[in-house]
Length: 213
Ligand SMILES: C[S@@+](CC[C@H](N)C(=O)[O-])C[C@H]1O[C@@H](n2cnc3c(N)ncnc32)[C@H](O)[C@@H]1O
Image 1 (cartoon, rainbow, N blue to C red):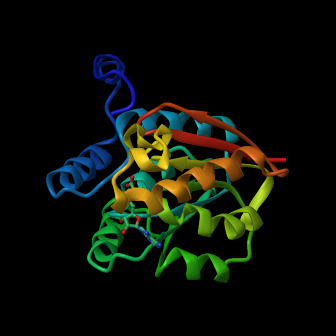
Image 2: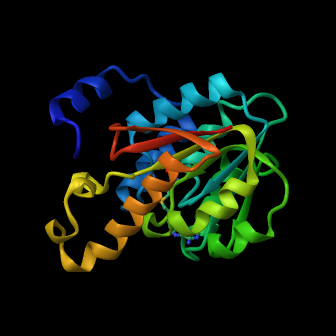
């Protein structure tokens, strides 16, 4: 945890409940150890979507569809979500959850490795939520930038890697060095890319909020 636990507990104690279906899917995901966005990130997304009012959202990393369903409740009428997942066991559960929520026509799930799937997409998105394998964000970035509309938002979750991101290469376990180096490179790109303005925020496990010029 990168933020004082008592502060997080206090902030979360202020949270209001989500819709019944979201509460149920969140509980099921947590009971089965499926990683989903934390409460702090849920509120952050709700605020961003309410300000940005995106018609086309792209998500990389569906899991069982919790965040896609949460986002679907904060889009303007006619808004759509495309979400990508490659873990075969989670795909039918996500599809079933979209059905339970009556959102099959609003949310399109694309199956496969995001690195391949992103290359097949050609429409522009005004909001992209990156929540997949952290070591691959840097590889997704060229396509994500191509797909992001000018003025669009890119939200990248879990960029602090439990705080280890600030350690030197030798301060992290040998097995974590590749992912550590790739996330550092990703954050550097987000901060220095001529087309992006980025703020790195210590919320949850760290979120990078970027807007495309
Ligand atoms: C943290 S979970 C997503 C949680 C989801 N956004 C939510 O909050 O409800 C990350 C998901 O990304 C998927 N994933 C990881 N690497 C991927 C890739 N290269 N292509 C597609 N999906 C990927 C994983 O299988 C996992 O289900």
